[in-house]
Image (cartoon, rainbow, N blue to C red; front, top):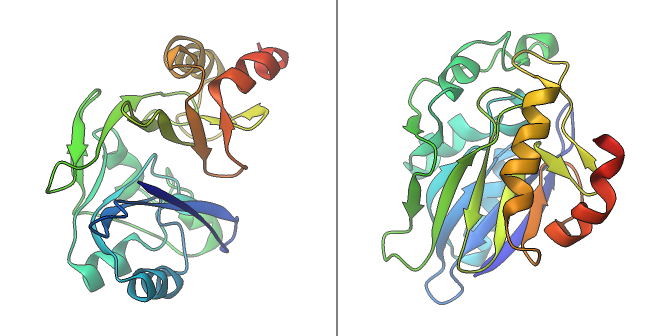
Length: 210
């Protein structure tokens, strides 16, 4: 599988990720934050087929390109079930603060530990609910390849903020200690706003926040 990190420029620079089977060219797009034309160009240039969009949480800086790509590619998008509040409420997703007023009403909703797969079952990602940054925050974990797309739950050397609607520091610490850091040490973490890191690295460095 190929992981391609794409920094996207909006009000906040956010990483989107393509997760692609290099044999078939089919894959997932995670957190399409902004710049839909840039993402479409990458898809077309590489002759990829994106089957599903996956959203780690419903903040505006992770969903800005979803509607355009949903229309252009005719593919579904998924989020943890509590993400409905964020996707449909501009105060919760914060888009109203930046004058964009994003609402998304056609999401498909997942539960904790749901597994979502490509059509040929060549790759699967398990949603693990990790609230704290928001109450819908989740990570998508590939157990076979030891990697996870973690949104804003944890970063390289840092953790997500908790001062926005639905955030809670004790809840976030619990998610990180009892869910994220329980993954194998060699698991690579791909976050929304930092370079990749590993579980082993964060176990050594994250104690400052706890």
